[in-house]
Image (tube, rainbow, N blue to C red; front, side, top):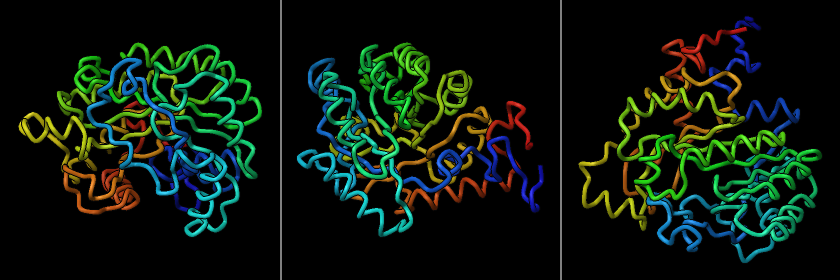
Length: 323
């Protein structure tokens, strides 16, 4: 349908991919701000439950907003997050609490209940986005979240990173892809919204490997998806290996990544909401690649410009057409 000179796609707007911001506005009728939290969780890949080394790429400090400190109560972090974001988005009055740091279901259910319900008690809180690992959920926890989902907007966002077990082993992920599929299936079975996170450009994966994985990803019961480019961060196992064996890494240059992601999303189904394409970390944490200090919104505009210049869109390779 051509509306006022704009082409409209199956997701209901003119952007050439099923953008998270537009999806949320459609669901709630207004802008909703996601507020990051650090609730003091650990990770089974760090605390000895599985391993003590952690994933080779991980430095959680690089992604945590300044107001996120686990020593602060949940409500204090949320209140400070609201004030922080009001400087940019003055009209935001509805929120989602984003349990972001480490594995946010990695605790006994009574502990989780206390933290989640404290977050939901804040005025204007519409729901929770819970970042975790596929091996940190069980039936009891998912049944509890299913109950919350009857009243609130609940998303369980799984760090999956790759569909290839050889890659998961190489980056010391500590779980298999089959575990990720099982966790997604069990979550979707309970009518809980699912999210998934993938890293583009992991060591050992060729460009062909990464494009080929879209067939598997397209078949997953995933409502929303996040991507980011592989970044070598300071104080990680990945940094140590990169400095010793730089020839084993083919990190994406900026223009290459923009073109690649345009081709990538052609192969994703229309119903899959794309939340982000890149991640941004402060310069002191970055080792490689060097994309300057471009913000994620600038890179997003570059990707959208590429889509427009090449007259392509999400799902085009699957036969998705404007409506």
